[in-house]
Image (cartoon, rainbow, N blue to C red; front, side):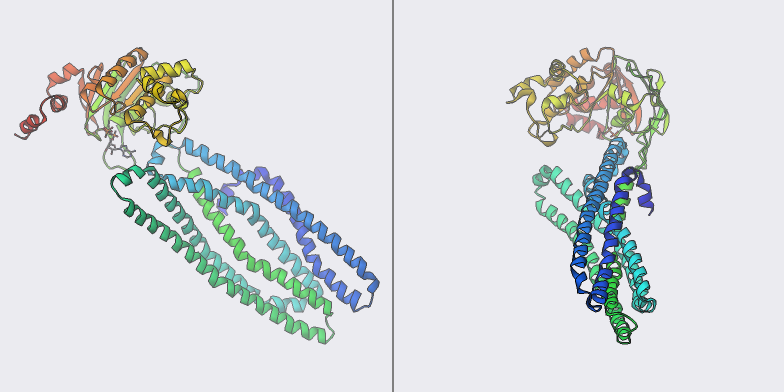
Length: 584
Ligand SMILES: Nc1ncnc2c1ncn2[C@@H]1O[C@H](COP(=O)(O)OP(=O)(O)OP(=O)(O)O)[C@@H](O)[C@H]1O
């Protein structure tokens, strides 16, 4: 029950609907138990007692009660549904909000398809239980309790004989519940994995086709689909095994009732009408107990779903805003690292070790080094995508944690290695970080990013709708739109992480000249593999295995004759000669 307790904040606000639906449920169940009593009166008093003039009244009374039951059922269902629908709306909102707040680190291990299935089918499973499961459980209690009381009223001995087999039924139901819950959890997990497979395949369909891996992909899908089938079959087998057993025990109760009840009637210790009423009441007890399997099933599914939802809701938000000073609303762009060390959770080696530097506002810093040397990691820390393990990071002389995340990130423009564009208009994509940007500002940003000319050649210009992830544009065009997006934010710190790798050198040079103008008095970090991309930087850091091993301007670094010089030689001189020299 702890799952339901932990999720109570989502359904308790709608408890009024729930309570009213339960009140109507009480009415419906009460009327259901009254049926056999009317039947008993009809047989014993009206028919056997010969009071035929009561028949029309009995019939009218019966119709009135049925009408009341129909109306109450409608209200009860409607309110129970309202309760479920409203609660999961709040739950879905909370999950989505949480996903927005979770740090980069969470997504390093998360699987998109699995998250999608949690937000859709798991939430649905939970709603179904809130709308129907709760009321089914309550109906069970009322129905069994009320029927039992009426039976005791008619004949205590017959009641005990009839329910003698019930403890066995309870044991079977308990065994069923114990096995069905893990089975349902496995179904949910298999479903999440299947979703992940489909999502990854569709996202990476170009790679699949380019490497002609369709057959392998089909095979992998078949395997995941097979796992889901197995999990579902295991659950079906449980149902198939336990249900006949439950029914058989129920039928034993009926046999006992008819045998002993028949004996009592023939010995005039029980009225025939009472036996008929007893028969109906017995099924009112057996039915819900057997149905309990279905309700437990629903409960188990909801519990398994709730656990998966809680995994998201309770995921740790490692990047917090609790030291933020709300009065800090602007950033000039001064960045200082003091002995900063970064260690990604799932990696043994340090990503950054003792990094120290000072970047004056208005300066351009270039970062170069082998892949995996830690260039992107430095910029991840400036945006607080990840948290450093040691050292200090100062922005305009104040610890980075003092800036509210929203303020910090709204002043840092990042163009990442992998450009992500939304499937909306180019205009909306450029203005994504600043939705209130005017059309002039959007065009200005696009011009500086060298994107305006090709955008104007598109049939709808800035109103052209892009395909998912910017499909339909070349790699260089996508990069330029992403740069325009970062410029449009008018950031105080601009980070270009390999942002011009797909752009030709001439366009890159033009973009950088335009950037120098917009970034006057602000700070720019350029990560690149091509020396030509950062040789004009005010200071260049050369990274190797998480450390800054050289620093200086382009000319200074060439004079140092170290790693930078070697990269320069490889890029500018005949590579074969350089490699031969190195081998010697
Ligand atoms: N999210 C992450 N989780 C775990 N390890 C990571 C993560 N991001 C980077 N790393 C590791 O940290 C080290 C530095 O990576 P980083 O991305 O900073 O290098 P880089 O110099 O930018 O490389 P590239 O030029 O290929 O982009 C690498 O060993 C990398 O595998």
